[in-house]
Image (cartoon, rainbow, N blue to C red; front, side, top):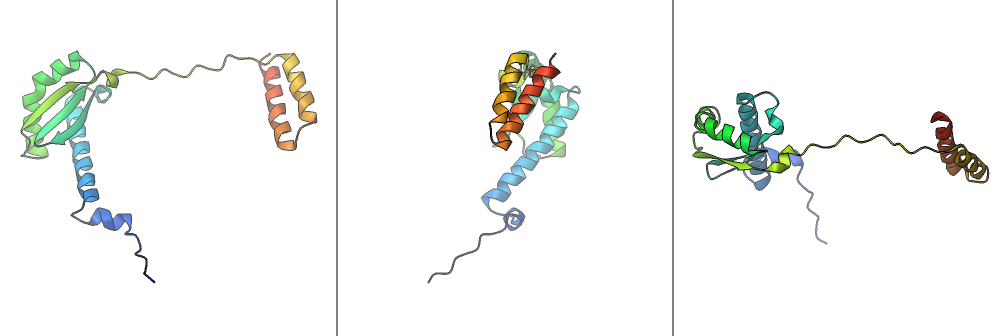
Length: 151
């Protein structure tokens, strides 16, 4: 019989200096640090409209929500690049800014349920609960109570 190999622990995989997972973790950490530096340089609350997208071949890719943010970052690009070279990596060559309108999409707040249960429906639910299994009866009675709450 062949002996099964036990899987490596995640801590062991992450602690190894080589390997794809360790490299991915290092890049993610580096992007987080860069993102914090950039949002600290911009106006408070700007993290909703500007984010670090990628870092490849010495080029930092930033995504912004609109043309106005694009223009703002274009004017700040040299200053940001110099600060990032000092703080993070001297191998940064340039900053590329891309407009991604999906960043600006706001999530609508959920609307409260406007549906109401009539008194007649509550009576029907209560009658049905009398002839139902206990679990279902409990649910039906809770629904029937909603009619009284809405009055």
